[in-house]
Image 1 (tube, helix red, strand yellow):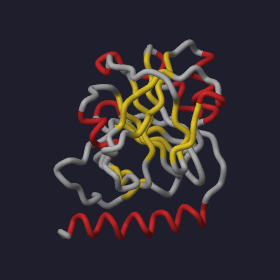
Image 2 (cartoon, rainbow, N blue to C red; image 1 turned 90 degrees about the horizontal axis):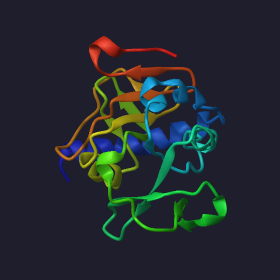
Image 3 (cartoon, helix red, strand yellow; image 1 turned 45 degrees about the vertical axis):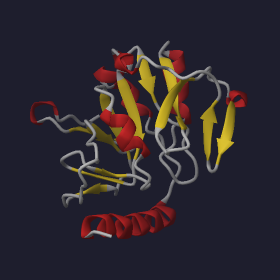
Length: 190
C-alpha cells in the first residue's frame, strides 16, 4: 500500500473516532439559502446515518422548495447511480448502514445542479476525506454541478489533505454555522 493511501486510511480511523466523541445532532439547513441551491432545479443529496451530518431537514426543505431530489444507490462495483426520490421513507431500503431509494436510475446527470456530499474532513482547497470506498469520487468525476460537503464544526482541516489521482475536490464545505466556497472571489459565510 502506498504512503498516501496508508495516510488516508489512518486519518479516516482517527476522524471516525473523533466524530464519535464529539457528535452532536445539529442542522446544516442554512445551506438551503446558498444561491447555488436556490437557483437549482435538480439536487443530489443523501440520507445520513449514525454520526454523519444530518440531512433530513435539508432533504425536506428541498422538497418544499420544489426541487427534484436525487439520492444515491450503490452499485455492486461500489459506483453510485442517482435515483429520483419521492420523499417517502417507506420507498427506501437498507443497504448495509445506508437507506437507498428504489426506482429507476436518473440518467440525465448533466441536469444535476448541486450535489450534497458526505465527508469526514475537508481542507481549504476542497479536498475531502470520505469513507474510503471511492464511490463519491467516481460519481463526482462525471458531474459538473456545484458540490458541497457537510462536516462537523471541527472537521475543516488547516492542513492540506493527502490526495490520490482519483480524488475529486468539492466546490464548498458547510459546517452547522459556516459555508465556505473555494473560489477566491466567492468565499462566503452564512
